[in-house]
Length: 453
Ligand code: HEC
Ligand code: HEC
Ligand code: HEC
Figure 1: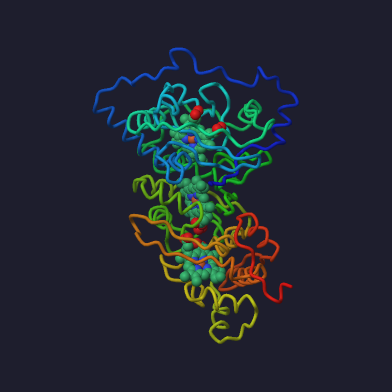
Figure 2: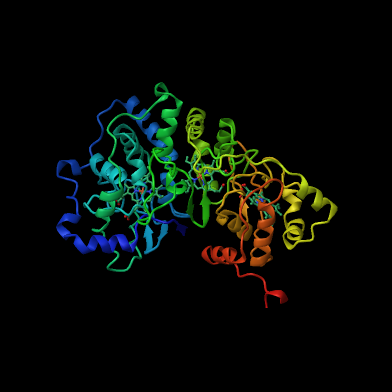
């Protein structure tokens, strides 16, 4: 099951329920003639071009990620997305008339994708990232529509109802969430090359590529706290699926301040670079989506990300410090953290912490290691990871999971050691934080040793 925190909580639902009248809570169904799919009137060449544009946008927007079940047919839906109130299953968006979106007019499709309103007028759960797709102009949505309706094979597969219990399963309060948090849809054309790379990058990041869905922190209503770079909270880091989708802003310690645009492009294209390797949800994003984006678009994303100011006030960079390496090599650091590191990690990440570029990522001065929130670090040590397979780097180096080998105390100690060695500067990790992540990601229980009683 794909676990994703979605933007709805019972408090919002109850608050809305307290004052809402049912009649207010539903949009009218997509109307009359507009409800019948109509071929867009275009020449064959223009039509083929539109479909290609749509295929590319569907890749950039990663529609397939949420709408294709493991082992299922492309776009036939059925992916379970966990939310605090129950599981939501993504629907079939193949052009099948009976069970998919074959009966959707362009207007009905557009309303679903950009405004989160289903064909019958009810509101979609914001597990569908319509708040980002609202930034796509109608011309791009037309291309998506042409691609899905004409190039994707229809699959007959009934949609699965949510597991959300009544009364939370009532959809009408979602309309109030939408009214409070969804932005207006845009009406102009998408920025292209002529508008400059930064404008193009902003469009891709805020719109189709929906980077903020994971990388922006969420508020009490589980809404993204910012949808544009007007706020420093935008892309300042969010937790998704038990990983920290980290700060992508200009911070030198835990953001992308030390990454060159070329290094950002290399990461998005190959899933690795001199600073890091993609893991968790990002490995899937790179594998399915960004590696297939054009060089120009990846360069635009990188140029845009480099314009983002730091999220935090502490602007200083990290400075390398050889003390930890020297002590490990001399065998003079007898702390549990250092010994656990030597026994379990140094074979790949080396006593210098610097690993081997593009093979075993560096733990020295890396922005993941130096993020305040240690969720990603605990998670990857518990469960291990595997780099994405990419055309640019067709080798998937992996890291084993240590859930069954190391206790919560060992993992806390080794990560505290890593976060304070080689020049790293991040808070200590406690055994209770490890225990919490172990439980949340359903990793194996810690091994029993005499010292844990
Ligand atoms: C992060 C996951 C996610 C991504 C990415 C995503 N969707 Fe969805 N989508 C969903 C979920 C979940 C629903 C159902 C929500 C509900 O039941 O309220 C949905 C609903 C829809 C619907 C409404 C279908 C209906 O039966 O009314 C359409 C159309 C749709 N998505 C198209 C797209 C397209 C096109 C893309 C890419 C541009 C896309 N989705 C990307 C999760 C996603
Ligand atoms: C489905 C959730 C998701 C989406 C969507 C997503 N990311 Fe990520 N991203 C993550 C997670 C989780 C991590 C942390 C794991 C890692 O560092 O590889 C991450 C890490 C990264 C990193 C590594 C940063 C570092 O310092 O090591 C970069 C760069 C990045 N994402 C860029 C992007 C961009 C650009 C987009 C939009 C095109 C994007 N991400 C969309 C989940 C996501
Ligand atoms: C067999 C080699 C190997 C061993 C042993 C190993 N790792 Fe890793 N480590 C990797 C690889 C490969 C990755 C990249 C995984 C991915 O991208 O999914 C990685 C990624 C990481 C990351 C994320 C780094 C980043 O910025 O992207 C951290 C943190 C980490 N390892 C810590 C540890 C710790 C702590 C230990 C010991 C308890 C350890 N590793 C043992 C190979 C190893």
